[in-house]
Image 1 (cartoon, rainbow, N blue to C red):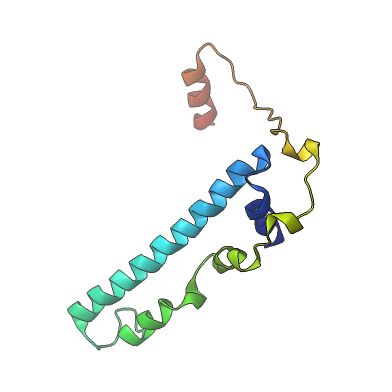
Image 2 (image 1 turned 90 degrees about the horizontal axis):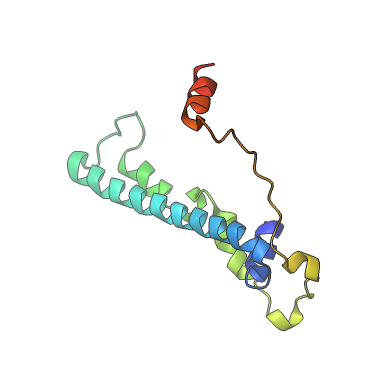
Length: 124
């Protein structure tokens, strides 16, 4: 949670935090989509089987209604990061080293016959 808070607070100042911030945003979006799906599923089940017992032996609509609660959010901590946002003037300044883009070292693969190289790797 503290890492997510730091990323949220400093993502505009440090280019190395742009991708982690985008990932956090996508996780929050994914959690919202899951919650929307759960609610849509609840309505579908209510139309199809009413208040009968659920297909897996669960309480049916009562059980599905409980899963729409905020406690069932997968990334609840990421939603709560906004509760801890601090005004920029109170934040410690980032060092120049932190503001620089990260140096990434990507593993290189042979340039000729690359497709064959991957096929050989997959067939092992």
